[in-house]
Length: 476
Ligand SMILES: [Ca+2]
Image 1 (tube, helix red, strand yellow):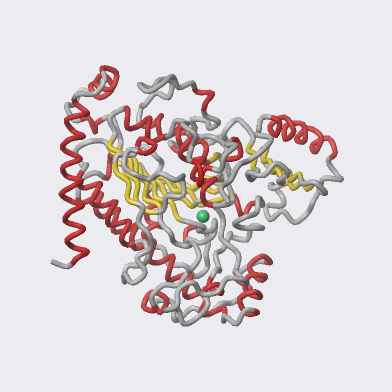
Image 2 (image 1 turned 45 degrees about the vertical axis):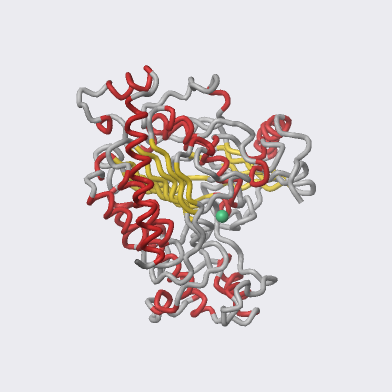
């Protein structure tokens, strides 16, 4: 047997065994968990516990999917997912790099509230979404990129099964094919119990360097610069300055995204084949905005015939900024939710503001899992900074209640705040205020025109900043 096929078989057997054990442990769980599962008149626990599949792309821009307006992308599977569910346009991640955003999703805490950097030290014992769901009888799995601390063995953060799978560079299905396959195996092995699974890919993180057949699917693409706004022009210019050609770089980027879309399609067909479609919530998002074209990186893989730095042409949909910045292009991400007969199909929501921090309370709410108790220790809702916005997923036209803040884990870092459509950036030397209602690209700083708004928001920024650590630790 081919080595990979053998590994796959081993994993299948292992997962099957785990599922059988988990099924037994669900039956033997606490009285509250049993009661929760027994609430349905059906004997099938899935009748009132939806499965949750959370697909997270890496550095994929707000405008990188066809359904979010990319002029050349071909993402039929994700477009279809959006047409079968709701596509949100005002979703915000909690960080501008990988780990901080994942921290927001997993712990419902602002990443800068951790005095020790999470990628180095983990979540400091804080409660995670997976821990809460696991305690309620869910089987929990994580496949793909980790970036959430030094430990990733099974059981970490309440995740039963963890496979931190890297890029499968030579796979014709693209670099995320391996982790999607592992996730599908997990889903199949656990189809008879409620499950939660993180499917966290590497597409479109550097290096974007798909196999030629993927890029060649876009051989007809000729970049017309007038299809893009000001911010993409700068990326195109940089690409050319380092010796790339914009058409080739764009085709590589599109090929990478296309392979992600294809893997999503495979996973969705698996869910259908297992008869799980109606009772499975599928969410797709990205951890922050697109990375810039890199000018300093050399090819990291000696087999590369060119420098893939040129290929970093992720599109923030005309918004300013991207990865590493707190402008809209850095913190706004695609967010698609499908839950048949629950989440409105074909709806496009341009106005409801919510955050990655809201993931934990909202996922727990739709799973009917209380966040107020834990068998391990007392869990108080104030431990979480997120809000239950599950009603927004289900069709409510409102925004989260509290404003949003961003700050990296650096005491003197710039702080950004979003309150309705007012976006404020406070750094040591400058204040910027933008009215996103009329200026979503954050081009016109109107802080001089609205001193009263600046003053009111500054007070909130200062109050929030006072709650944060006064020093941060990071491993060198
Ligand atoms: Ca990222």
